[in-house]
Length: 93
Image 1 (cartoon, rainbow, N blue to C red):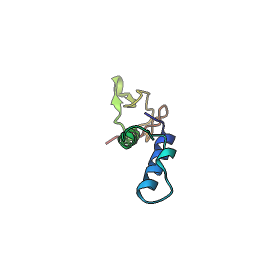
Image 2 (tube, rainbow, N blue to C red):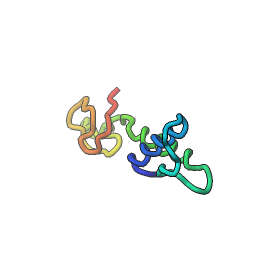
Image 3 (cartoon, helix red, strand yellow):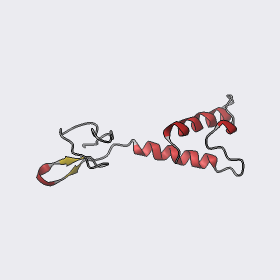
């Protein structure tokens, strides 16, 4: 999977191609000379990045300790909106 910057550049380039702006496939990091699989790969990577931003539910350990559902780091405050370690949003209810 390409990084966030390349996914954004691919989406901007593709939207320009489809909506008549000056976006050209050859400027896209997903561009391939042989085959038309670049769009499917771009959409897949965009979906993966969006899913990574979804909030995670906390995990409750022994003695009522709360941990991030993504990285398992301790959540010190009940209702803490984001994990201090990985930055993921925490979904309490």
